[in-house]
Image (cartoon, rainbow, N blue to C red; front, side, top):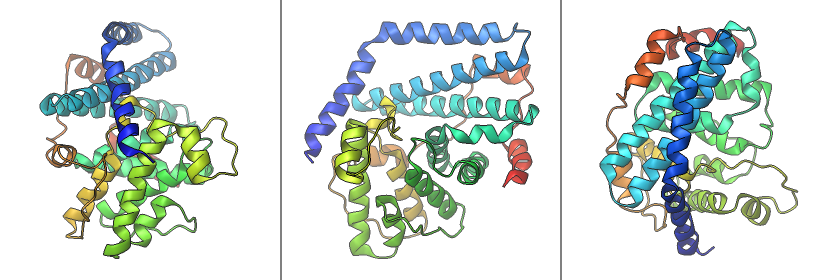
Length: 312
């Protein structure tokens, strides 16, 4: 794998996204119009679905803006966009969960969107948001119960994120029977020699999947499997050059006084390490968030967590 070549292509993808400012600006306007329309929509479920889609899309856009700002060296702006993305995505999740709870149709949530939940869990670790992290972990447990195959989504990655969550919350991680790259992290958890190679491998996995999901999965992971619609955890432009999941792993090991190897990898270098080490508290709010939170009776993260526990 030519790491530098792939990384430069991924950076170009981020830069190309940023250049299309008119498209992005028009998209933001449309989402804000959709949100305004939701306030006068008579059909509650339809209004809430529109709100959820809009905030999820704007959260994804803010994630892309964070990557774009980071690549040009504007780290403070990148942090602001990352916090905004986290706030919008969290609200989108609260909306859909409240809607499902009200409809007594809660388990239908767990047949899709695994990657979104994993993204929120990773940022919850980086921002030290315990309530959101516990909610994400509960949802991922429900995914395992109701949709253990995960459709086309990466269930090995899901289990990796769950194990990170467990260790962060001072619980025991679970070793899986599957022999995959992510499971190797926990198989070598206390082995300084082999752990270094495991970290290097998951960084390569991130790089390869972010560049060409089908090709990398076919050539490197499961050559005998026909790939038709596989979804990479790193499809979002804002995640391609930003291995937040490894930053979460680094933070957990550091907080527990565990060894961290010297990693020579294009995705794991300064200033990314320092950037994710010094994230501020996720105290983001704006007029849009405030208006929606004041108008709609969405469940809080703690309230939802209390109600969904009975589904496990």
